[in-house]
Image (tube, rainbow, N blue to C red; front, side):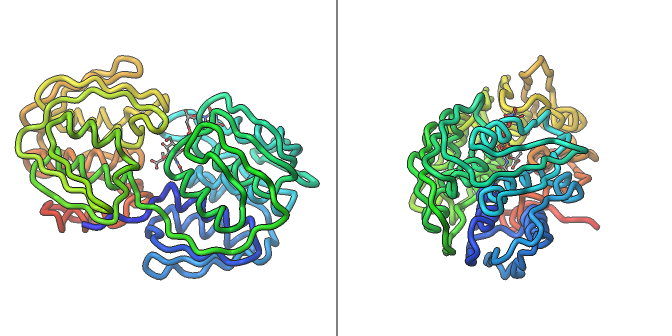
Length: 402
Ligand code: EPZ
């Protein structure tokens, strides 16, 4: 089965198109609700985003008549906050709604604002909107108080057109940041250190258009591997970047899976009942928080007890309550879930609460006795391209019910 391009690389890269008047031609763009939402947001700024043809998308941000991100769109997808840096850098002004609450935890954007203010922007927050202005951003040294992925991406993009050099310290190191930096460099940006915790960006006067192939989705890859580890069997994934999910592969091997990786290809085989694996989520290269729910589903049917500690978000265990409805034995102790594996889960009706929680529930449904019905799958469609069709090709008995 072929994995799609990465949602969490495609979204910031679409925002990067705002940094130039010339078109950005993207390939390997996943067909997702979130990509459509971002295209809609760019559209209402005056950017005529071409229709997505298969995995191709062209974004010509020739003119930006309305550098604004309205609440109606921002509330549906927090990643829209990443237009703030590019709009400020390109237009010198932006009006962007504050993202508001989120199912997986309190997710403030203080680090985004701190960095842009340090670069000389004036930002006021009124009536739920961030109003930002600048003559021209100035390069400076910014030490992030904590590791934030979209914070790093927002500031890195803003710094590409700033006067002078910006140094981002305690930056996030996710592979999606490296993919964004690669695209920006093709547009003429001067960036060093993406993928490390210190990124240097030497500002330039203007950027140009470019062609870029979005990296493979490491979370989609990990989701299919976790499904195979829970259900047993042997699958091969193509179009992958195995080096972008090392921590996940290590935990799958610990669970007893045999994994082989070759250029662009990953194969997993699981013949026995998985062994319980404890884990602690952390910023990259640590274990991805976006894989936590899928591994909780795996732990629910594993032999032994797993301790799953969530350190990135403060409310990302809602799937545990739904897994309990399927007969899982899970106790939540603060930021740790104690999961005692059971022989067999029983199918039942469950409800998705967020994107990755829904993936965890689908995996649990694959191994539960009888039928499981996962409701509110609009969460799933935000980040997985035709998940049920892909699983069906791998032997799952799964269908989407209108
Ligand atoms: C990105 O979100 C991803 N989204 C998330 O994936 C992912 O879970 C997360 O990084 C962590 O890996 C995209 O890339 C579009 P953070 P982001 O800023 O950037 C706190 C998925 O399922 N924080 O790295 O929003 C924050 O509250 C999604 O695909 C501040 O306090 O996450 C959190 O506890 C879900 N102030 C922690 O930092 C800030 O200014 C890490 O958040 C920014 C963040």
